[in-house]
Length: 291
Ligand code: HBI
Ligand code: FE
Image (cartoon, rainbow, N blue to C red; front, side):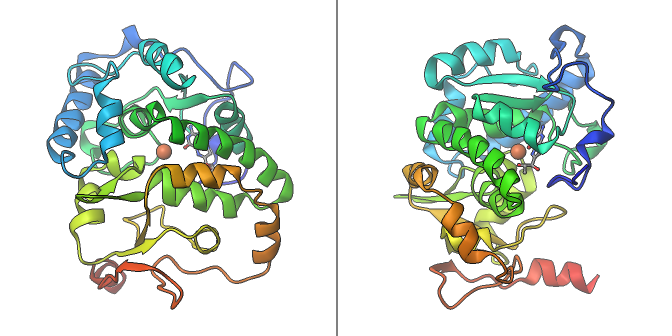
């Protein structure tokens, strides 16, 4: 089974009962301790995000039954999401095979991990848990542009798999839905779930001098490798979420052809052709490499 972006083979999980790998969330089975971990993460992030999360994220969160005291019930999230953008949240045991993941997205079903991380792993996660998926991703699914874009990504993923270029498309998802930044009149803001759900990367992505911040360019991003084990070395910035909607309308096949056989760019590379908003010092990752 192909390794997914989190470096795990989705097949590591026990064989699923259902072909689409969904399970019941089992909301009543969550323990007080699990709700407590959610509360810690929720309160930490909620203090940090004002002025850092984009307006659409804040607006989405405000209109969803997501609070501090309990892990949200996916049935209640789906009721609200369905009315707003036709999406629903379905529970899965963890990472699912790529084609299962894309099939769900293509039908506006967001697969969310039903488990929550342990108290001693607040800042490092092997697999997307309910905090990453629900706190990080779900508020953006209330935004029509993102809702359409992620469905298009699901449809595109099924096509990309058949073309054998999934790794190229996965980079577009990674540098937008997971780690994207956008420009607001009052400054750069977060819309990527991987950042919005991370206490440390929320600060690093916006405030640290180390990473590059580069204007998003589809072909350039398709050729750019990413980090799964640490903060990103570069963040790509869009002007607004409608820019993603434009991407959803493009036929990627000619692009895949054009970049086929061309070398990948390393995560920290800055190209002469890049629209550089901030050229990073690279100090954080250099220090890590120095060990
Ligand atoms: N499964 N549950 C889950 N969540 C993900 O984000 C996920 C996945 N399977 C595959 C995957 N992501 C990525 O490898 C694809 O986006 C390429
Ligand atoms: Fe994610």
